[in-house]
Length: 230
Image 1: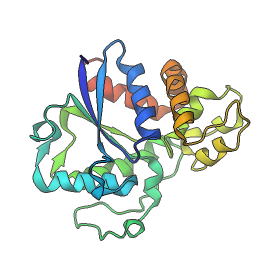
Image 2: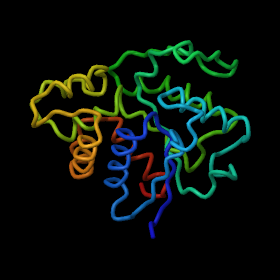
Image 3: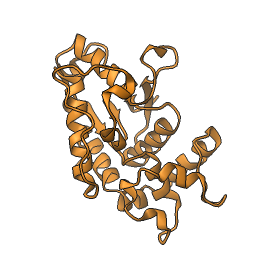
């Protein structure tokens, strides 16, 4: 039996799930956990995937609940709820998913200069919280904005220290396409075999990922704080 039960709300059900699971394994070890993906959920496809699916999940929560996520009857069985968005969503528009924004939602696009990476993530963090309102992450909610793309953590875990793609890694909107073009030894495509090969390297090389990515350090700190480890 696992020590912890963690819910995941993410843009995707392959790369994002497996890479975030790998990160959690590194951060929480030796504790074990069950990761339950609430969004996208293959048996409940009505919300769709991508950032629009995350928005719709948050909107659903907001219509039924006010207050911390751990007091929502449908979520209180989880020890933590991870809410994921890639930071490139800051450059998108509600019109991209054919949705009229609610009055309380903060506007998109909400671009901030990157670097610094903290500034690039802060406005999008506020947008996500506005989608949830009047619900809020509370003491068990972990907002995860890994980089412009979650693929940045794969690059940080797998590329040699002098590789050109590591320059301003968290700010690269092209990291996914660039990883697909690399020689075979470093190539990463969002296929199941590649993701399942990369995920254990994220766990094994987490110290390297955290050194290269400030948002990975933030995720680790936020996760440990939820579980009372400082």
